[in-house]
Structures are given as structure tokens and as C-alpha cells.
Image (cartoon, rainbow, N blue to C red; front, side, top):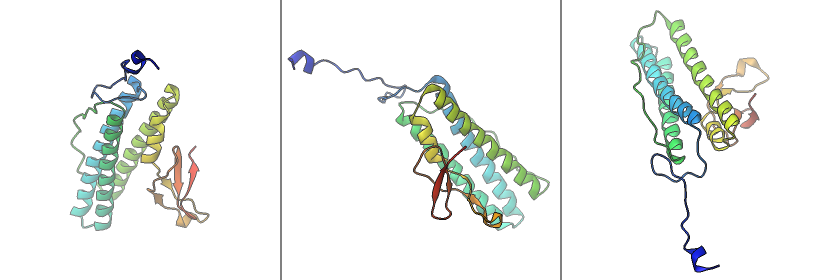
Length: 186
């Protein structure tokens, strides 16, 4: 090796935050990731509002569960922010809307939670689709690590219950029965 080869500058691409990027992220993927990060923040506020509504009615089990869900949504948002930073991006936080705080009954609250979770799931699926289109192998693997939710597999439908387990494999849905088996998502 010659001296000029040793001293040749190495150009490493950087993102808007000045961090080195091994692989650039498409503008569409960045927009979707930031939108998803903000959707998680909105969901956290919505869950907390629902938890307060249940606590006011002394339905402590519901209140506690929804407070836990709010914390999980905050953690998901933080993980998406960390991921964007790791990809050399600067996460943009949008203003979140004040959450709804009045409902006519438990069914209406649960319907609102279901709609919210459907929106989050649709957003994750959109991230997967965009990553596939962009041939971005890093993003779906990270999304898979954040979201491994679904219904626990059980031959007995009475025992099937929601799961919030994390899988080690991307693109997976967890099923802790019999021993935390992860299966490919459809």
C-alpha cells in the first residue's frame, strides 16, 4: 500500500443529525417512521385518558391495565426515536391532540381502544410494506423487535389471551404456548 492510499480520506454519509449512516433511509420511510412515532405518543395519551376514566369509576383493574398500555406506547415511541437516531436521522415530534376523556360506557372506551390498536397495527404494516419496497432490511427487523403482539396460541380458545412478548426474530408474532414459540406473521 502506498502512502497516498493510506491517507486517502474516507467519505462516510451522514444524516441530518450528523451521525454516520451505514444505509440511507428513503424519505417515505422516514416520514412513515416519524408518523408512527407520533402515533405511539398519541396512543399513550389516549390510553392514559381511558385509564383515568376507569379510575374515576373505581374500575381499578381496567385503569391499571390501561395505564400499563400507556407506558408501553411511550416506550415504543422512545424506541422509534432511538432507532431513527441510530439511522442518522433527527426525529420530529408533532403536537399530539388532547385525548378524548368522556365516554358513555365501558363498551365505548373498549371500542376506542380497539380502533386505536387497529390504527397502530395498520401503521406497522405500512412500515413493513415500505421497507420491503425500499429493500430496507434494517427497518423491518427493528419493527419486528418492537412489535410482537397478538393472541397467544392455544388449542383451547378459552385460554387464548393477548400477548405482549418480544421475539428475537423479525417479522414474527409471539406465542408463549407451549414455551414462547415465535411463529411467522402472515
